Image (cartoon, rainbow, N blue to C red; front, side, top):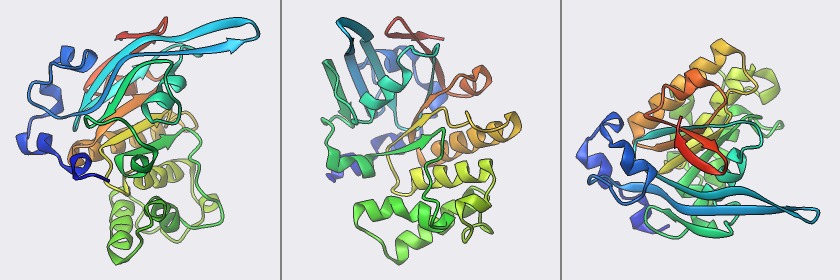
Length: 251
């Protein structure tokens, strides 16, 4: 990974995410001096359904700064998951451009540049919580004392210091999602993409997971894009956007 992706000019400015200008984050370019971690311009994505072409995304513009949190809501089938797939580099747009910290995405950079939190946790059932968090470091091919110490620190920060040796089946849903949050932060990513992270949790547990995710991202100056159906959770982010008719607007 290039040093350009690991440097953080935004952290040095000590500017709080709430002070970001809204227009900066919808249209890339008005950066107000803060580092743009994620920049998407005019993203389009179509799919064929039989002989019919479905326009899922019709020119999405989005920019997110270091330490900022952005929520995206939208009706089922509006293209939220499609957008996350594009932002993560797991799929390619039919048109438009995407930049990670000012550079074109590359698969070899993904594991260090971003972390992902999913609705269904996706923990490996045969290994314990600590090993699941360390799996992110294994993907980078770096696993030593420093990585083990960081994984234990993240489990402590997520309230799981006493659950490190437990298998996923021995954890509650909220605890499993906390392990997933720790795993997403393991490689000190610049960006977290969270796709309905509370969808399988009860209201109280979901609230605590969202608060944890927002708090850790603020403390580490990690950008966060949160896709959610929950309006209350969306309101806790720096900016609230809505995906409708293939485009983003203020929600």
